[in-house]
Structure formats: structure tokens, C-alpha cells
Length: 374
Image (cartoon, rainbow, N blue to C red; front, top):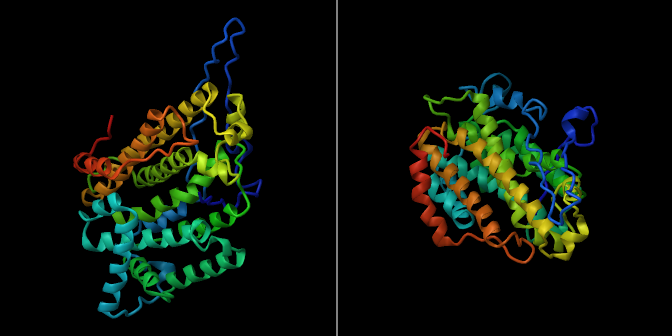
């Protein structure tokens, strides 16, 4: 599992002491009973767009002219139409192969929008594979430095290959800001050196980098409905929350696999509140304490999905289906963890292809509504 870092994660001035530490209060155990203590809900608030320094991203990506102000010096590359067609076709095939349910959802989008989403997906996947792919053994800070330089070339209209060219064309068609892309790369750097998270705030930052950034990249492409009941800021909040919920779910699904790699992507202070530690994770045994701990972790992931639903229903109607597909699929993963009696050590919470396809009609139905799923 890849960890995407916070660029200012080691800067004590970046976040206030109040916001950087999640406070988890534990109900004292009943000394007259052998039953497990009842724990209150764990910390759910994350970190605002303001503290993540993303207000300017929202502002720049909300402009109607992609070439406004600071971009006026850039010139859109004059790609041959057949070259661009092949570039997007390659992106389409990759998206179809590795994200089938999401890919089917994009087919309802306008041609320009779905091509752009494919290009963004492919860039994110290639970035992810630098750390978690077949060539990850060759990972180094120099590799990530070169990848970031290559990103800057993409934004400047100088793509390295055909897949990069699709993203370059997308950038000149939609007001995409470079910061979420840079943040994802910076997160990869942290993934090479960090494998523990002291509290939920640290974990939230990780989730922002690994998945929240994707939501921010996607909003300008997917578009906001003219009838939206939320502000632009509210839509970006929801996009970020969907990424947070998705990554929290990935973490809970992959606990056993990560443990085999010596990694624990769970808040250390919250493990301790339930009488657990790394040793319990590495033992790969489901206990009553673990079940109670997992119930709270799953509840928190669902909390973020609930928040994300508010924004999913306010996107442009043609863009909602893939978002709802993702929401329902990841919610189902949480259901499967529960069905497995919280054994995410030896059982992978897997949603089969048939169930995925059966969820598509429901996702489509939800995409037609302006209200959240209750």
C-alpha cells in the first residue's frame, strides 16, 4: 500500500497543536464486569482545505478560462489529431483494464470529460506504481525528482510520451492546478520512509495524499451542476472526503497484507485505547478487542462516505455515475469486512465482478437524484 505524504509534514508551524492531534477519550472499564469497555466514537474531523493550503487550488480550478493570468505565457501544443486519438485510446484501455466499474461509469460522460478522466487516472496509476509497482525495487529520491520534473514539463506543454500527451491536452482543456499532482508525488517520498501513524490527523494527511488529491484533480473535469445546492467549496470538500473514505477503506481491507510488509497504517494512539499494539496486528489473530476497534474504524470510513454523498449528487449529471459507482463499491468492501467477522488479517474483503456489475444500476439511479443516500 502506498503512502502519500504531506509536504509540510515536519513543519511544526504548518498546523496548530490543537488541529494536529486527535483526542480519543476512553470510557473507563467497569471493574465489576468482565465485558469489554464501551468506547465512544473515535475522532472523525480531519483537516480543512484551509489548513491543507488548498484554497488557492479551489480558486484557480474554478476559473472559467484555463489560460487566465499566470498561464497566458503557455501555448497549447499542436498535436496531430491522430496522435492525440491514440494517446487517449491507450489511456482508455488502461482504465478499462484496471478500473472496470469506474470505467463503465465514465461512458455516460461527455467525450471530452471522459477522455480527461482517463488521462488523470493513468497518470495517478503510473505515479502509484513508482512505489508499489513491479519496478518499485528501483525506487529512489532521484526517480521521484525526475518524475516531478516530468510533471512540470507536462504542465508546460512538453510531454515525454503518448500517455503524458493525453494529460497535457487535458490540462489545456480544463483548469487543472499542479498542486494536487505535486502533492501526490511528495507523498510517494514519504511512503519510502514512513510506515507508522501516531494519530488520526497523521493518517488523514496520508489519505489526502494517496486519494484526496485525485478528487481535487477530478472536480474541474466532472463539472458542477448549475442546480447545485452546495457551494464550490462544499463540492471540493466532498471530493476530498470521498478520497479519504476510499483510502480508509483500503487500509482496513489491507491490514493483513501490510502487516506482512512490516507496515501498520492504523492510528497508534487508537490501537492503544483499545488495548492493542503492533504486536497484535502482526499476530494476525482476531480478538474481541480487535472487533471493537474495527467497528469504530469502519464507522469512521462510513462517516466520510456520508459526507461525500452530499457532493456526489451536486456534480454535473453526466459525471455522477462513476462517482456513485466508487461510493457504493467501497461501502460494500466495508460490509464484506463485517461479514468476515472483522478478519482482515487472513481474509481479503473482496467484491466479486458479478456484485460490482449489479451495483451499477443502483449507482446510475443514485446519479439521477440531487439528494444524498440516507
